[in-house]
Image (cartoon, rainbow, N blue to C red):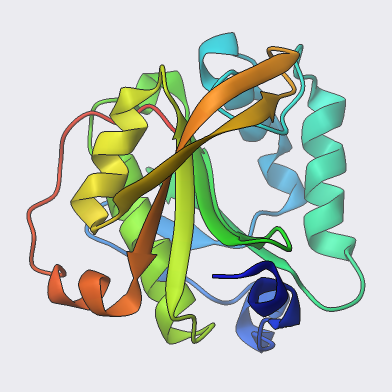
Amino acid sequence: MSAIEAKSIEFPPQPAYDAGTLALKGARVTLRRPVMTDAHDVFAGMNDFDVVKNLSRAPWPYTLHDAVSWLDGVENGGGPRMAYPFAIVTGGRLIGTVGISNHGDAIELGYWIARDSWGRGYATEAARLAVGFAFTHLQLKELEAGHFVDNAASGRVLTKLGFAYTHTVARFSKARDCDVDCRMMILPHARFAAGQNDSEGGTDHGG
């Protein structure tokens, strides 16, 4: 997707999301809009360098104030919504987040999972729900995603959804305070639809 195409996309409004009533339910996880009462769960999951190092824009150290500030932006961000973040909930608590974001040059899927929930297939299930939302509700034709080269587990999650590698770029990691090689991937709607019956599960560490 070209930069012009990405910039021209204004996500269609999702009143149920803004009202906090949208719930995307899978077999074991549910996606919903993050709310301020999630702050301690967000902080607990992100207060771990092995989680945050896999994200490009999260700071380190990660504080409770960072969690509160992010949630305030989700709840009170004005103007056209250029991102749809979701809390990944299982057992009544947030174990990570997943979202669709317009970065101007691409519309990307991103996610993280707390360490105590790694290796259970939650990321794959949550990402599949978010991708379905992107293609069905946001009417996108394709999505991009990427993972740092030392986070191969995230690549396995994305491959299960049908993402295919395209190129490698240097992407700044705020937590590491340096550029890190990032392997970029793309998923057309048609390929995702064709693979909906693929098996799930496996290791997942966030991406």
